[in-house]
View 1 (cartoon, rainbow, N blue to C red):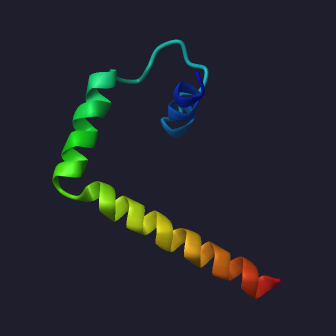
View 2 (cartoon, rainbow, N blue to C red):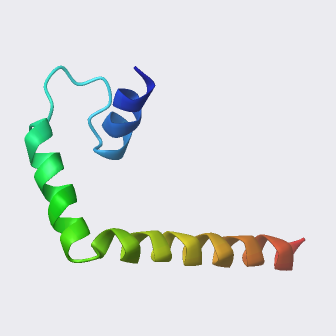
Length: 61
């Protein structure tokens, strides 16, 4: 499944037989992140990083 491969890549456990932790742990972590608006903060940081990268590429072209 594509999503499983993506999570394995993100968690640095690509093609490992056993997951480093259970699915429930990820669900609880995500819920805690959302509860403190951490998901929005991470998204904003991602957008800012993408803008900076794009500007850097344009400046060197």
